[in-house]
Structure formats: structure tokens, C-alpha cells
Amino acid sequence: MDYLNQQSATGLTDSHGENTPKKLKWPKLKGEEKRLKRPLSKRSGGPNTPGGKSKSAQNSIKHGGYALVPRSREEYVRFEQQVYGHLKPIGAVEEQLVSRIAFTLWRTGLIQRYVDEAHDAVETNEISHLQLACSLDFPFEARYQYLLNVNESEAVRQRRLAKFWATSCDDLSCADSVANLIAAGDERIREIYREGIDILGQTFVHQAMHEKFFYALDRVMYEARECRNSLGIKLSGSDDLTELVNYWIYRNSLKIAAARRQIREEQALRILCDPKIERALAGLDSALQRQLDVYWAIKEKDIETGRELQTRLLII
Image 1 (cartoon, rainbow, N blue to C red):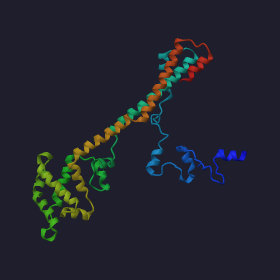
Image 2 (image 1 turned 60 degrees about the horizontal axis):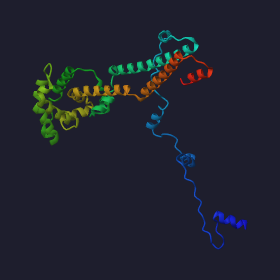
Image 3 (image 1 turned 90 degrees about the vertical axis):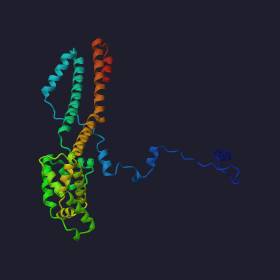
Image 4 (image 1 turned 90 degrees about the horizontal axis):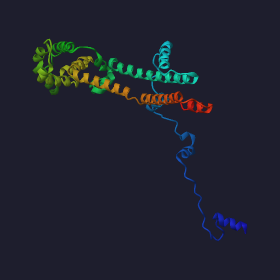
């Protein structure tokens, strides 16, 4: 009888099938339990891509504010004495609190100095040619990117361009011996060749005053880069497009200068808005406020018991 009652309670069927079987349901696993159910080979072992690994490697890095060249011990002692002179602690407890306050202020100053020096360095550090090339959509091969940082004035580039134009475009191929596309490009060179010698030979050329000529020269130089005229074929044979790159830099000097300013502004903004620095300063400000609150509370009210003193010291 007991056995039958037990069968009925558990929902097991008898030989006549009077009771319907009950299916056992496994409890739903949470996210962490599901992960633990998977075999070790299928569990996440962290990032696999180089980019993910380099990013996760920075998880323990907070900021570089304390990585500066350490100042002398004497300088810190002088600063601490100034804080002591301002707060005027009496007794060992107040002196210990003032020592902590001075150290917190010193750390805040270190981070602020780090931000100031990094911000000032943005204006003097050289911008890499790779950054400039990406910002400008540089149309040449990577081996020519270094020319973006070659420190030459516009007048120097103009003299180089005048010499290149006079010596490289005076012996064009005959139109009958080349394809029609090359012949059309050479014809455009002939149309502006003499004008180019006159304009580029001047001491200083204001490009906006010769806008029509430079538009025509832009097309000639583009066709040379695409090997659609004899000039491009000649340069391609020598495997040296340096003069075409110099012309591109000469024509885009204002655009390059604007790109430099934009990159510097973005770098300065990243320094000033660095969340790691902001969290560090916020943490120090909060700690300093707690330390000052405890210090002035002790100043205004005598400590009566050791437990009260311990409670006050623990909150800082």
C-alpha cells in the first residue's frame, strides 16, 4: 500500500496506464551557469585578435600622471611644511591627518602637471606623416609620405617645380608615334608649356592670380600620375614620382596646414578629456574633502573615546 501511494505521489504510471507520467524539467541556468556547463575548450579565453589583445592589455593602466620625473624630496618637504603652516595641527592625530592632506594635494599637483606638460607638447611634437596622409587622402604610394614632413617653403617648392617643368616637358613624343590618349595628354602639355615657364619663373607666384593655368596644370600632373602622357611614362620608367608629389604638396599647402591644426586640436582634446585623468582627479578631490572634513571635525570637537577616533580615521 505504501508503495502504491508512493507511486501515485511521484506520478509514475502503473501497468494499466491510469496515471500520466510527469516530465522532469531542468531549472533554467543563468548566464554564468550556462558558461560553466560548456566544456573548457569552448569557454571564452579573452580576445583573440591583435587589436583586442592590445586593448585588453591596457585594462590595468589608469593614467600616466605619476610617471613623471620625480621631484626632489626637499621640494616635497617644503610643500608639506607650507600645508602644516596653513592648517596648524596640534598633536599627533592632527599631524597625521595634515600629512595625508599634504600627500593628496601633492598627488593632485602631479597629475595636473602631467596634463599641462602633455598639452604643451602637442604644439611642439612633430605630426607623423602617416597621420597626415590618412587625414589628407594622400594619392601616392606610402614610400612618398615622408615628403609631407619635409620642411621646405613654398618658394623653394616653386623653384623646384619651375626647373622640373622646363627640363622634363621640352622633349615630348610625337603624336603620330603614340596612342591617341597619350597624344591628347601631350597636346595639353604643349598648350601650357610656355605659359608655365613664364609663370613659374617668377620670384613669387600667387596661385589664386593664375587660377586658370594651375587648373590646367593640375590636369596635366594628374594625367602624368596615371601615365596618360609622355611625362608620366618618363617618370614611371625612372620609378620616381618625387616631383609629382612635390607639386601636389605645393598645391595643397593650405590644406596640409589645416590638417596639422586639426590633428593637434584632436590630440589636445584627448588629453584634456581623458576619462582616466578625470577619474583620478575626482577620486583625489573626494579623498581630500573627506580628509578635511575629519580634520576640522577634530579641530572643533575633542575626541572623547578611542572608538570615536578610530571611526573618524577609517573613513579617510
